[in-house]
Image (tube, rainbow, N blue to C red):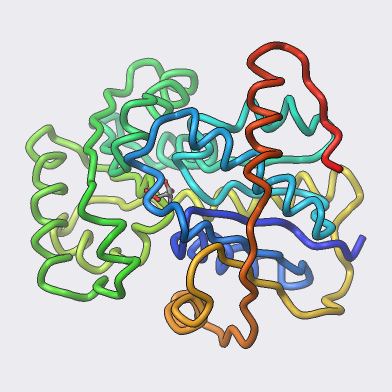
Amino acid sequence: MRLPVGVFDSGLGGLSVAARILTTLPKERIVYFADNAHVPYGERPLEDIQEFALGITGFLISKGAKAVVMACNMSSAVALDIARESYPDLPILGMIEPGAKAAVAVSDGAPVGVLATSGTVKSGAYQKFIADLNPHLHVVQQACPRFVPLVESGKSESEEAEAAAHDYVSALLREGCKTIILGCTHYPFLRRAIESAAGPGITIVDPAEELALALQNILTERSIASDKLTAPHEFYTSGDTDDFATFGGAFLGRRIDTVEKATWGVDLGKRLASAVTTNDVNGDIN
Ligand code: DGL
């Protein structure tokens, strides 16, 4: 099945996940959507994120997606269940479960730290998933509102990034954390600053690695894995296409030649969100 895998995020962050998918599954084609018009998601109300996630999933389906990856922890935390209800036949993967699994696997029993957006922290999603896997592990969450704007403005390698990383990571170290989850897909682009703030002996977990394996498994199980890359990857943004191409290419580690501007059907997202909350699910996206 040479149809693409849909991948989306509020902006550039999801490219850290796209890069991992392309390394693990080089025969898969991706269609990436960056909702730069609405970044950052992490400070928005839950209802907005649900509408965005449902509308964007519909957009990716309209581009042929055979599976969708929410390369956004915020969406995964608050919109994964609702999206799966709205699109029951489509494999939809989120970041939280793979991240929790990877952290529990490497943890030595010391507290696990989560760096995430305010919304993901508020959802408590990492705490819930980790407790399901190991109820004895203490989880410490740290909201990092300064991080996403730094990445989106190309300041991942700046003094500001170092100062922010120092503040956020210190809070986790004070609580005795030995494992730190990058609970937002923008944060791998700040990895150098985060690692240097953490110092030696701290394991940094990027959920993207486990996510790519989970995607590989589901594509294989459903016999929809691609045997050959036959067309170019596609990139869409609801924001500025030139900015996305410039920063995005650097983040993805490969040239992005074409970026198309797209709106993703906010009406569709609204309709599906209200259908799901009123228990009247209508998966028709036309
Ligand atoms: N990169 C996203 C995440 O993983 C969203 C960040 C944001 O827009 O606040 O949560």
